[in-house]
Length: 320
Length: 107
Ligand SMILES: Nc1ncnc2c1ncn2[C@@H]1O[C@H](COP(=O)(O)OP(=O)(O)OP(=O)(O)O)[C@@H](O)[C@H]1O
Ligand SMILES: [Mg+2]
Image (cartoon, rainbow over all chains, first blue to last red; front, side, top):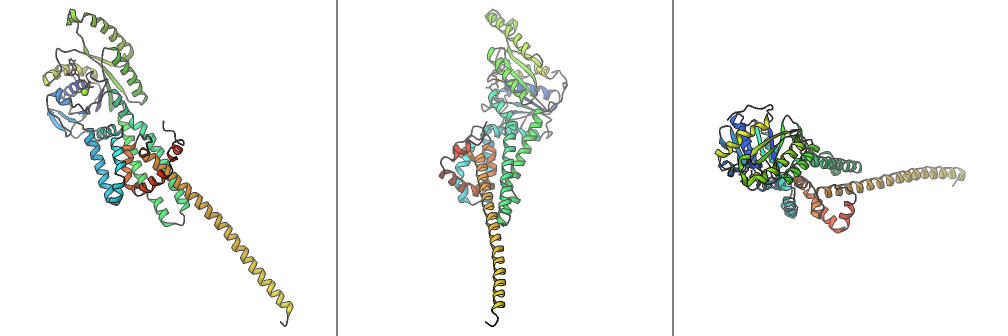
């Protein structure tokens, strides 16, 4: 394989795009390419379909496992992460309040566990944990994300939740101040206002969001790469998604046009080729300000190291 | 009974000090009850604010959308004691959810 370290040595690369466009394939190939130029790389999947193992032809799990020279892989299990998080809270609760009360509010915990944002939040926390662990021993992390909608929600979490938490902290402060005023001569109220673990805990969360926002919005540390096919819907969806990410100030580094039908495909593809030309022009027009890399449609699915290497040889261009 | 005049003066003086003391006492009473009322009002406001805060944290229990319920869970260990009475209070005031929701912009 050829190539060099590219212009940037940024540590975090996210691959996203519409379902089935080739995110897992591209993320895998890119990670393999990074490893081949000597960067110690961790490949992270959040796909519940667990297709990373398929692409690599190497089994992966929710523990970080070595894949080959300079390459490690992990498949995040959102449900498992959420369960772990809630288990920790339950343990903590048992050490603070009576079991009777723990029992009474178990329902609350179940609701939170099943709430629509729970899996995203669990994945997000794991992302941040891995990002914080950089250099241990990998110095690059490649994230294979879920289809666009989920990923956008995921990446906008720190922005949205940050505001929500600010609001919560302000409310809590205000109510504690009132308690302090009302409880001037009452010891227990006073005590309650002085040491508040709730504000402490909220502030810790706020700092975490702040930090992840720094990671995500700094083009020296993160970049987002969209994978699409030369078809109408993926182009439209990508345009919308890029707009949103830029609104959240998350740098979009490039666009990969996957499954480009090669001219030698033959008579059978002639009509498709004509339509494809039109879409490719549209892609240039819309995303021309970013790095665009085309990957050919291969004869068969990309499975196992041998075929991943074919793509890996081409995909390093995205970093040029 | 020998000197009625002096007696009268003494009585007058005593009544005067007595009235003064009473006046002072009354004045104190007015201030105290005013302060007490104020304290009660503040305390009520504090509890209301606290209920609102709980609602923002755990509103999903009542079916209110909460974008952060996964994260507010980690506050449960500290709020658990309050949680049960709060839920009861809230449940007793059926309209409270709608009433409070109207106060916040959830967008
Ligand atoms: N350039 C290509 N040539 C041939 N087959 C490809 C190419 N790129 C991807 N594929 C195949 O297309 C299928 C879908 O690709 P992949 O799993 O990478 O998509 P995805 O975007 O990760 O999908 P999902 O949204 O389900 O996670 C896979 O079977 C993969 O091997
Ligand atoms: Mg995938």
